[in-house]
Length: 438
Image (cartoon, rainbow, N blue to C red; front, side, top):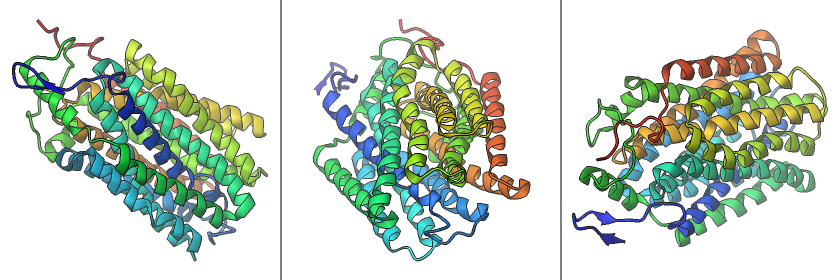
């Protein structure tokens, strides 16, 4: 780091010049994905036989996802503000500390309530740790790399989710459900915490340097369309209201993030149960659900970078509608191959929309309050787990089966995509700049 003539710290931005630290953060989000992935296959599929959930208790089955969603959403909110005060690295490490009891809770759980309690800790871990891996990468990179950056982040995280789903399915078969999950969880959480302490750097100084460069007029290239109705250093409530309703673009993005989590709640709980009821083994379920994660994760290499070229709005709308179509396909056919195809369609739809929504927020959030904006967007997005789980449980209970939850989710995705189409303008500063620098 050097200092310019104006006294502004001259931090270097971009993936290439920050490659070592960027790579450490990619590894971190892979571990974050592994952590949530260990709850994805075995736990819901064996809710009845291993943890005592009565057959047909849709609301009880959804309880752990509801708890996870509301807790993670709240912690996303907290993480963004807290990271602007104490730094990104400390928040990341606190997230790993919160995860330590989870493997033991799964091992010794006498009832489903213990699993719900463990997912509260999972929500804390994910809200703090995943938020920080994303925010830290964005601190290091340039405006034209944001889609690629979030593509890397979400690829690594959801590749981890998919890997964990497959591996825990085999571990549960080999060692027993509880023992396999405990072994997996201890290794992942312990290693991730150690790597955080040894190799991760705090990136908050990069965000401060970028803000000072903007203020000094030293940033080059097109100026983003930052919201005009917000102060230079806004408080929590000011950023929250801007993200939630005062800025039409941010509000459209936030609602899309919330609704797309209905799909993830469905895949987390109803999809494994649906497949289990139709005769698939735990390993088979792991592979079908894994297709969703693998396609989602791997495709984000392409889709995140693609949004840096063609813009954010088109991939978001297309992804919402394609993902909804994939959800509907699940109940329109039978067999492992068909369900894998439907999962792949859902995964590619998610790959189009997921990194692009976060990149769109980053496009028009000023570096002075970008951490807060990302945290509040992620608050609304991950609250979608809780709201979606409640609605899916209610719909299944009212209409007599899991299939109705699939149709409800497909419809919600179509309507949400339509809202983005109508209410949100393009956010990429190169394609829709406020003005050009002189």
